[in-house]
Length: 351
Image (cartoon, rainbow, N blue to C red; front, side, top):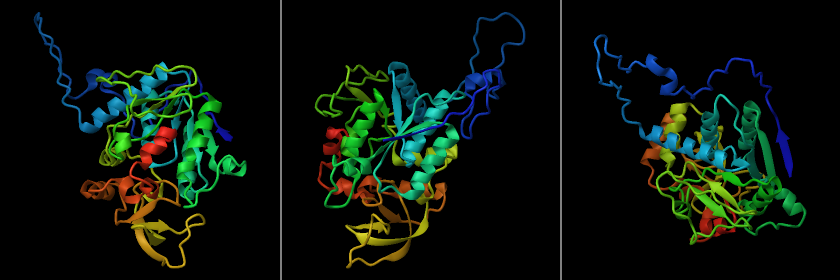
C-alpha cells in the first residue's frame, strides 16, 4: 500500500480563485445582473411580485444538480468519504462534479485507486497529473503487492480485474473510509441497474441485492453500523451519451486513448486487444495496426478497443448516439466470464 499526498498552500486573506474551466457561478451569484431578470415596477405601489422565469433545466443540468446534491449529502452525513479515481472517463466526470460541488474550496476527501499492474500507462500518467494539478491526496491499493505476499493468486485467464476486490476492501478498512464514491451507471450492466444510489456494504464489504433500502425521491439513507460502509453512485442515472455530452459541454480533459488513434491490435473473442507486456497475442493471432479508440478503460488484459474515426469529443458523441451496444458489453472480457459476472463480483465487494 502506498500513499501520495500533495496539498496546495491557501492564503485565507486572498481573494477567491477564478473558477476552473467549465465551472460557472450560479444564477443566484449573478443576481440582478442576469439578462433575463425582471425589474421591479418603476413607479406606484404594487403587491405584485414579478419573478423572472428561470426556464426549464436541460437534462444535463438536471443530472449535474442531482449528482452534486448527492456528493454534498454524503460529505455532510459521513465522517471519512473517498472517491474512486482510475483516470477513466466516469471517474474523471465524478471528480469534476466534486470540484464544482465544493468550489472555491478544495475537494474535501482523498481519491482512491486500485492498481492492478495491468493498467494502461497513459491512464496512470493522466491520473497522476490530475491529482497533482488539483492538490489531492491519492491512496493506491496494489494487486501486485497482494500477489507478491501470497494473499492473491494469478488467474488462469491472465486478467486481474476480478482480483481488485481484496485490495479495495483492504484500502477501505485501513483508511477507515465509511463512504466510497463510485462512477457506476445503471445503463452499464443489469447488476448496476438495480443497485441503489447509496448502497450498503456489510462488515465484509459485501453487497446483498435482496436486502436493499428504498430510495424515495431525493431521500438517501446512509445509516450504517461500525464496520459497515456505503458505496455512493451520484451518476447512477446518467447514460454513456450523457457522460460524453457533459464532457463536451464542460470541456473536460481525458486520456487520449478515448479518441481514435493507431494501435497494434489482434482479434480475440470478437474484440480488438492491444499488444502490450500483459496482453500478448497467441501464436495463431495476427497483429495488425488499426485506427481504434476505447469506450471504457479497464485492464489491458481484458479491455477491447473498437474501430473508430472519432478523433474529437463531438465525433464521439455522434458515435455513441448511434451505438446499440453498451460499452461494457462491447469491450469487456471480464464481464463475459458468466451471465452474472458483474453481480457476482459486486456481492464480494467489487466496485
